[in-house]
Length: 169
Image (cartoon, rainbow, N blue to C red):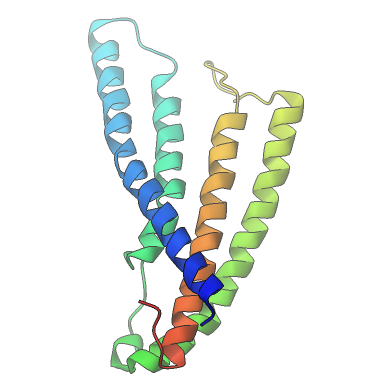
């Protein structure tokens, strides 16, 4: 593989590793918010913002961690035939099927950008009693999807190199 592809794979892997490790700690933020929600409901006046904020943190956790999840192969895979194949066959099949994932993510990003543009242009708010602005979570969504697309392309290059018999890492 050319050096610029190797550099791209290293850079994307490093970026998704940092973002993914950060995203792992968001679960503690969500737990803190839900704990506060429980305490406030039982001892104080209930907060309007806690459950929706916990949902926003969970969305960030899920989407920002997607690229790292793919990088470390912790995503779900149906292994009916896959385990029986050689590493090279697995790489060829992965390189082909990953193109479908890339297509799906491209459509998702297109919709996300459109939705984010709308949220920014019209100051979209949630339809809840708290009524937070939706733009921050939609921007986070687009960042997460973009990082996932970059990781998918890097994984495609890794699979292609492995299928050729010259793994990148």
